[in-house]
Image 1 (cartoon, rainbow, N blue to C red):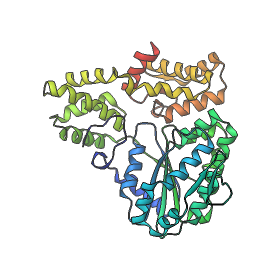
Image 2 (tube, rainbow, N blue to C red; image 1 turned 90 degrees about the vertical axis):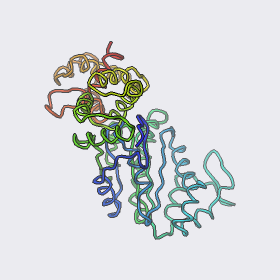
Image 3 (cartoon, rainbow, N blue to C red; image 1 turned 60 degrees about the vertical axis):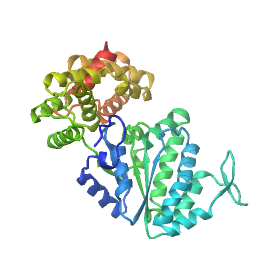
Image 4 (cartoon, rainbow, N blue to C red; image 1 turned 30 degrees about the vertical axis):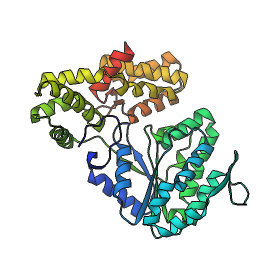
Length: 385
């Protein structure tokens, strides 16, 4: 198992969580559609790769990342062309001959600004072409379409086009999922590094995703985190005692793969120079990890999706918590008044900060703190001061 911090992992580098795959398989077999729910860096994309690589022969799986799409038209174009991609069609030729034959028979003869054209037919918009393609699938295998960063796409459309267009895209997706000709042979799985539930709630469109079955992708439990960290060190030639693993995990507290990989990476670098691991080495590994701005800057950049007032409010909330380590909810209410932000917007921002893995109030509903000391220290050093 390689140490890979900040990127999705695949194959032998994936730390399996069988219960998650079992939950997902149950929903797929029952004909449901899935929303993977988890903060950033917890491993949603890696889990999607696991689905891609391990679903049985009765399924044809495609993974599509739509993060870069900023318009409704671009989104549908991306989906359609992914289904028409030669590599995907080549996979289908081995797994689902009927579907492969259908796809091979539909080729673009002309592309236009308003849509596409099949042979001598009239131009057709990409959304309709995608739906018609799904409805025409004739195979005994179920198609699983995984849309990664779908929530970011919705956010992009809100920012670049309009709320109305984003809502329409959500509505059309729900209609596709509920089309019996599609649903009996196609499953959609959605995920993203920002919470789809928060994004749609902000535009009063939650009704368009309430048919999705939510699967939470949680941080590791303590014992699983210890086993993961030990295996990671063992397979990278790092001799480490269990007490030092516990100490390292204590520096993290919130056991997501990213943080464990990040510290293991820095321990490995120090270990090359002096093959010994102790608390002092781990402390230096933490310092080195926190000095790498690129590993944490996305936490600050994420706030750019809020309104101007919301961004200022969110930044001060996080800076206050990073300074005091824990903050009562009444202090956050004072910031709402200070920044003249609407109560509803402030509430959604706090919800987003919780969902996206910055803070929690799980121990006491009135007390907020950072999920991990790592992010708290980085924020205090680089943003709050």
